[in-house]
Image: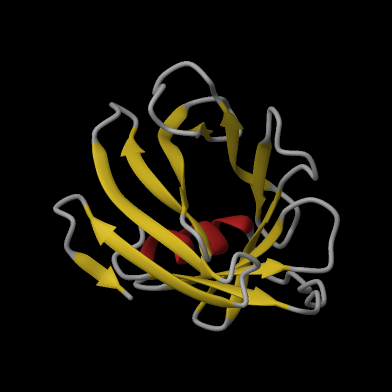
Length: 167
């Protein structure tokens, strides 16, 4: 579990694929012990694609569908081995726009994420809610895009007491 801030960034060019030389357990351990991680979005790709960076090293990639209906995101280590799968689930929380069930590759539920669209005249953004496997809220994050197309972004991360961990 990440103990510090989660930083969301955008890139205008896709990064080169990492050349894995370490076992999968190395990357999983690095994710679990991270004090801070960067979620780096690939802007020039079909679908949703992100690199997860810890200490300047790409430790995982996340890929999602181009169309969001029934979305599934898969997190893989640099060796291509699945670490976690997030499947869209319409059932458990009707107040949020989209809900995801997080599972390990064996199908064991690890937790949940819900998102809520935030929209005003010149801004659009999302608030994400993070839950453990028992559906207890463990934190939140939000991303506000000023001028609606992500020209200026503000990312914030909160713990389960609504205390700001990153802004």
